[in-house]
Image (cartoon, rainbow, N blue to C red; front, side, top):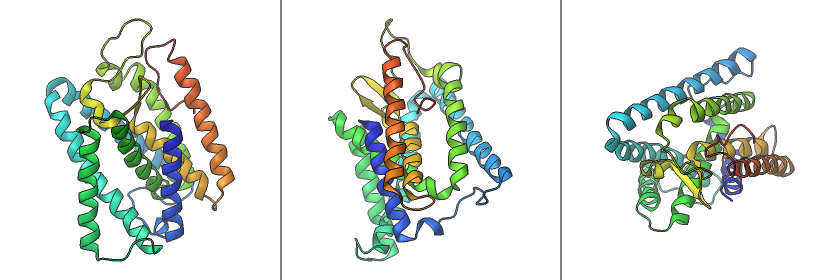
Amino acid sequence: MPVAMATVVGAASGLILEISGLGSELESPFFKEETPEATTANALLFLLLLALGSILMLLVYKYRRHLLHVIFAASLFASGVVVYWIHLTALVHVGVLPYLGDDVLLLLSAIIASILILLMVKGRNEAISSLMTILFGGLTGGLFSFLLPPWSVLAVAVAAALFDIYSVFKGPVSKMLPPSPVGEPRGLPPEFKWVVVTFRGLSLGLGDIFFYSMLASLALTHPSLDPARWLAVSLVLLAGAYVTFRLLERRPVLPALPIP
């Protein structure tokens, strides 16, 4: 269910950014060229950011664990304001929302980010918390399908899947997973509830939601709008996620990205 929702939210994000024309106007530190050199550079840059973020998270977890809440809250709020502001602006461009001024849109984005973070963390209903995480991850993934050129999106997804394998089995994530009874999945520590979607006892990271939605958005919008292509890619992602979840019945932990 979380994977299916991620593909829908990612597609909605991609559709809004595409028909508003805002997606083509977005700037990013990544190369816009579709050359092999630019694609490789983008993948390596993204991989570097993943590695640095994972190492930093591991260090904080080991030596200043109580700060994880603060770091997650600040990161989700700051990035959330940007993500929601861009999507609200896109909705203004397509006439869904009236234009109230940039300051009002920014304030509204900050309010939305604050409310969603409170629902993610303070909400007693696990389903609502997961929905908020999927919404944020899905919109962010949809946004990144425009910040990166199409071939770079695919290259980044492959690089992230390889890093996911290393991180879960030998890298930073493996160092933060507590032991669990034999035959049961290993869950992340409670501090990570900010960035995890829980479904039927299984945990799916915010990063996984991000990549599923980014690929779904790319499939819908590039090179042109094509719902059939989005549906085909979404079914492949769902099939891969299903296989991964079934394999978790035999292994305590598995990376979610490689098989889809």
